[in-house]
Image 1 (cartoon, rainbow, N blue to C red):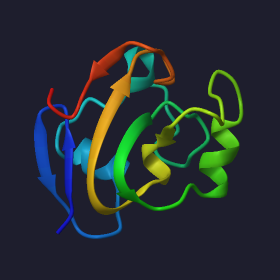
Image 2 (spheres, helix red, strand yellow; image 1 turned 90 degrees about the vertical axis):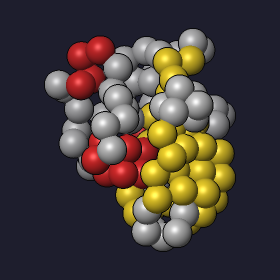
Image 3 (cartoon, helix red, strand yellow; image 1 turned 90 degrees about the horizontal axis):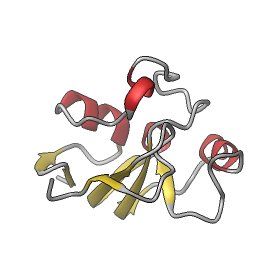
Image 4 (cartoon, rainbow, N blue to C red; image 1 turned 30 degrees about the vertical axis):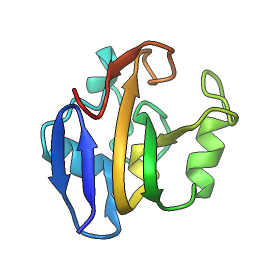
Amino acid sequence: MPKVIAEGKTIDCEHGSNLRKILLQNGIDLYNDGAKVINCRGIGSCGTCAVKVEGKVSAANWRDRARRSLPPHSPTTDLRLACQTQVLGDVKVTKFDGFWGQGSRIVWTPKG
């Protein structure tokens, strides 16, 4: 079983699990500020669930690539949309500041 490490928690999940669902189901604070209320609920259109993921995950699909190609995101950053990412192996997740998680200051790391 793959392990997701985020905000000081280690979570076991099924291979192919949706990263957004795993984080939210386990009490991980995925959204910043007003994005906690105003987000697309996982359809990949808002970009507020952007996180840095280290480990084995699915390739970025067209929704992920398209949303991250629009400001304030950039296709050259190493962020992924949690709602469009499937966990394929052990992963570590980091969240950054900014409404869309696109900032440069770390909000939480895998360790906390």
